[in-house]
Image (cartoon, rainbow, N blue to C red; front, side):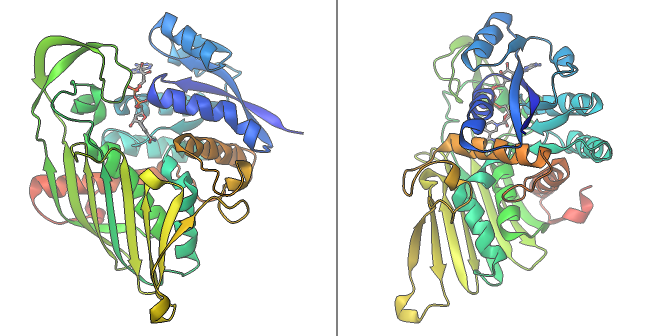
Length: 397
Ligand SMILES: NC(=O)c1ccc[n+]([C@@H]2O[C@H](COP(=O)([O-])OP(=O)(O)OC[C@H]3O[C@@H](n4cnc5c(N)ncnc54)[C@H](O)[C@@H]3O)[C@@H](O)[C@H]2O)c1
């Protein structure tokens, strides 16, 4: 007999929509022992929240997340708000005895992230679980890369080359919360480097032990103050005020790092890589083979097998859509009937439900403790850039 768990979502825009779609779709695709029940969606504007709840099939809307998280029908709180709110909301939910699934980065600041990891450790003793929506781990191609490394197919890893390139942050993009350090913590760094640090740690199974150098740069200092509205990530279509104000975050951060296992790595995140709209890419080179992934072709993983005889070596393009061979795919469509962005969130909510039912996730799922490790790398890179020196992760606690 399946049981169910009541979900309370906080945040109703980009991620609020992606998570709502995941919670409502997951029981259709997956056989779950614990199924989500969409109880409460929390927003700030009463009318908009009501409309959102009705459109996405939440039982009710609320403009008070503090009351909603204590509702006895709620078992898991899903935090999909700007980064400065993650700590207050997640810690309050854990203290109210609820499991928490929080968006990435874990927090805007290392201090907040540390408090969240501490609260999660304490809550674990009360059997409460935490999850962080590093959704790219749940692309079948990325999970396959993780499995190939685990099976030794790449051999000893020497290079990790990761970039996350977007181009929506041009001069005409208004000063959204993503450009306010008090709210976001950082710019492209926490937004995009967080994803590729997590992916690199996940695929290699290794930890970064030193950031050897970094650049943090803001090209566009002043932006128009938004007047509200505008649905897209870039705030396009929203009203503008005449006023302009200062962006307090980076537009790009690049850094070099060393892994404990000996691999060297480079990371680059920017919102100003003209022509690159969502190029979340990673290449890993080992002494037996290499893999390459580009989210703009998310169903594919490129693999070079260096153990083949030399005349047969070449990049093979694996279509990661084989039910039974590739993670989660059996829940969706036949081979080469492609999946998209939303499936990462659906598969993640399936794995959250599996964990809550006492089962193992298909591949490891990051909790607050794990995401805190990623946050420490983010911090080390910023220290390295600002102090122009190498920073050992042991310095960042
Ligand atoms: N996993 C991913 O790939 C991914 C992608 C985009 C964003 N994110 C993360 O998701 C989080 C939200 O980003 P987004 O793009 O959805 O932002 P958004 O601006 O589209 O939505 C933020 C939501 O939070 C709500 N909110 C703000 N302050 C609030 C408060 N005090 N109380 C209740 N609700 C409040 C807003 O009303 C809005 O509904 C961020 O942490 C971001 O880094 C993750």
